[in-house]
Length: 232
Image (cartoon, rainbow, N blue to C red; front, side, top):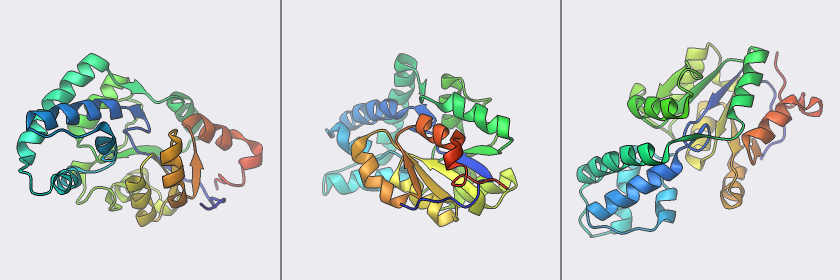
């Protein structure tokens, strides 16, 4: 993990687990969908799928099952139905500190965007349920680029839409997949992860790492950190 970020020209946010607390809805949906197709897996396995695109989810489940039959289309259809039920029942909460961070960026005139492995319709539903749809006018989704994370396409597209080079963008991510994508894009990968086990596992892939958005915002505002987050 490097200690210095030479310049800050924009911030690009991941969505699930970073901006919104949607992970529990996916775990619920995947667990029920797996049972619908005759598969029982522990929640820890599904938690390992966060940040993955659909193709990778299919591959990882198939690898886990080995020779057991698996119908991905049936699984994802069931998962979609259970996901809609989950968000209606559980709702989707904002991650602590997101509003304060967005206010800081807006006050400083720093451009920002959201880039997610989710498709546009699902991203919009999530953000709308969390009351953040209008907070992110610049959104790049999996169906708008050739390849999802860990490929760099989402972050390169987001930087282009913001009118900056990816090299001056901080990418805030909570997953190893996202950090790899940020690195591949030439951006600065910043880990925001509140779970100690994931923090320890993912931090080596980041240039900076924080346990929460509040800690990141505090560093951004701290005069002693000004040189780290230097903006020209």
